[in-house]
Every structure is written in structure tokens, then in C-alpha cells.
Length: 92
Image 1 (cartoon, rainbow, N blue to C red):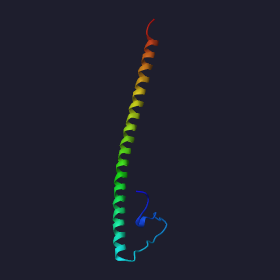
Image 2: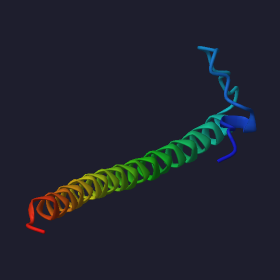
Image 3: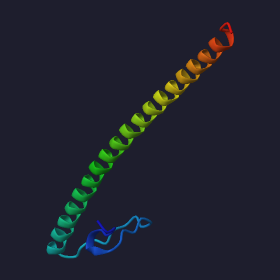
Image 4: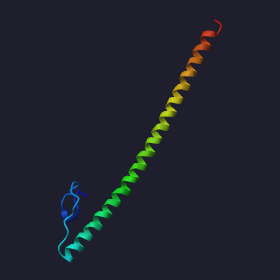
């Protein structure tokens, strides 16, 4: 959607009033446009929700991987320190 609302005009977010149609035909046109606009907004909301869920899942996965990497690095550091300590204590 390109940011237009009823009558093809850009939405005026600062106006609290809407121009009312003067004929029954214009009323039906406005209703049809509002229904289309509503459907587009609902679809946008659904799409945004799905995007938020995917981003949240990816973020959780990245955090999990980061924890695993940190845990592995700590484990490797401990093992290398233990190997170095054994070498220092071994009889020559």
C-alpha cells in the first residue's frame, strides 16, 4: 500500500474530521474504499506479526548459539589450563 486512504488522498493524521460524501453513490464508494483499506491494514498487521515472530525466533536462536559458544570456549580454556598445569607438575 502506498500510504493513501479514501479518495486516493494521503492520510491526514492531524485531522480529526473526515469529509462526508454528499450522495448515496459517494457513500457506497467511501464504504468500499474503507473496507479495502481495513482489509489492507489487517493484512499488514498479520504480516507484521509474522515478521515479529520470525525475528523473535531468530533472536532466541542467536542467544542460544552465543551461550553455547561461550560455554564451549570456557570449557576449552579450562582444558588447556589443566593440560598446562599437568605439564608443569610432571616429573622431568
